[in-house]
Amino acid sequence: MAANASKFNTFTFFKLPSAWWCGVRLRHLDEQKAVVTVRHRWINQNPFKSMFWAVQGMAAELSTGALVISRIKSSGKNISMLVANNKASFTKKATGKITFSCEDGHLVQEIVEKAAKTGEGQTLWMTSVGKNEEGVVVSTFNFEWTLKVKE
Image 1 (cartoon, rainbow, N blue to C red):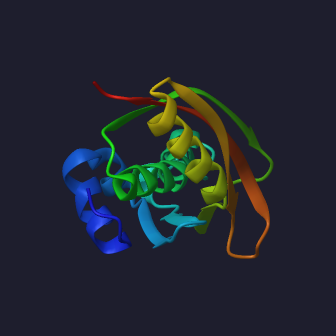
Image 2: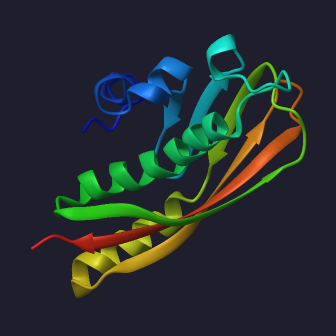
């Protein structure tokens, strides 16, 4: 798994093809923040002329998951990850280009270190906020990630 945006997008083509075909793309990834974009198009629309909620969910999940994957990779440990729960709220129709940002990198660092040190499963909630081109929030997703060292 690559830790830079370009290689991550190649990874999505092979391992997350539905996200790739819907236009979900990682645009920025560093230790603290991940940014994912997706544009409303025919392939990802709902009957109400906006982006289907599940496509927003894929983009939001990728913005949180990319931070987790990157931190696990840099730790050098064999740690599994899985979404246990998620919550979402929708505040405006998602049309045009939607940008999802997660700035919870500091939380991921702590939890990966704790999982590696204790060998016990750990959980954390991460938030991704989706905004349209005008900067208006269209949706907010929260994901509960579980991490556990593989034996």
